[in-house]
Length: 298
Ligand SMILES: Nc1ncnc2c1ncn2[C@@H]1O[C@H](COP(=O)(O)OP(=O)(O)OP(=O)(O)O)[C@@H](O)[C@H]1O
Ligand SMILES: O=P(O)(O)O[C@@H]1[C@H](O)[C@H](O)[C@@H](OP(=O)(O)O)[C@H](OP(=O)(O)O)[C@H]1O
Image (cartoon, rainbow, N blue to C red; front, side, top):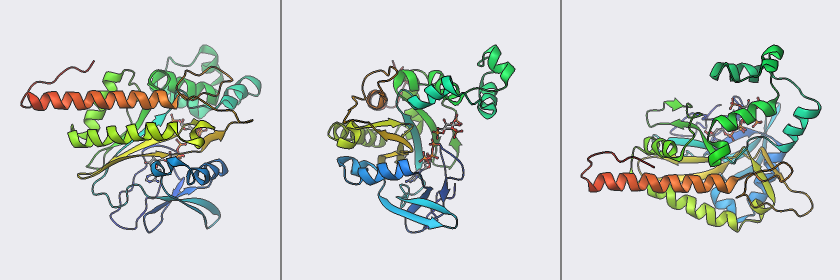
């Protein structure tokens, strides 16, 4: 990904497909066009959630490709620290599951990624085929990370020195998430509190959002961004966010069963809010103790 080079440039892609982004100027990033995402952004600009989404400036063509013009969320930040959390209890659409049963395409690249992490993960049949379906891979990633249980997972963190870590896929418990949040924020109380209040505000806004009520939100991330003086959280990536048919609505806070299209987005948000509260408590205790012993997070 090419980062916006308008000014202080922090060129980074924490998650997602390589090559999806293009250089832009003036505090914008260009993301390869997807009709699904463009439609969502269009609606979101007219929804209460607008305050939590990068500003969308329409489409632009560069060379042979069409791009979505988005506000660069790192613009103006000095030495930004970033975290990408993929939200929801599953990262695959129901149609992916149906495809895997009917016309299963085997993905050798996904099989290779799986074997690299855990050679014993594929079944004997999958080993023999040298491939897994996309659904199988995504579902395996969901169940071996905190996605299925906590409703989100940390995809990556970039620290102040610009180093990127993506090794959070084994995190399973809230206590481990809290440790990761303490690491991500350097234990800065102001930053933790700012994130906490932003997520509470997001929670309120989601409940009043016609867009959220009427869309299944899959594979979307919350992007946490801070520097020494500011901290904020943004909703990004609507490439797999789709409207529900026939005036149906989702609750977003119940487990998924096939056909329900529930995404568990609010389960993830609630886990994150709880974990941030725990991190705030840990740092407060440490400060009261004169920065003494570390407390165990439960
Ligand atoms: N508006 C933005 N401002 C700043 N950084 C952004 C913005 N949008 C995306 N990014 C960066 O790019 C990364 C990938 O973004 P995004 O998830 O939209 O890409 P994607 O290719 O659709 O991902 P996926 O493959 O998971 O669907 C994010 O983790 C973040 O680091
Ligand atoms: O992060 P990982 O473990 O490398 O796995 C990728 C990740 O799940 C992406 O979200 C997904 O793209 P979509 O969200 O667009 O489905 C991609 O599928 P793809 O290879 O078919 O693009 C996976 O390979």
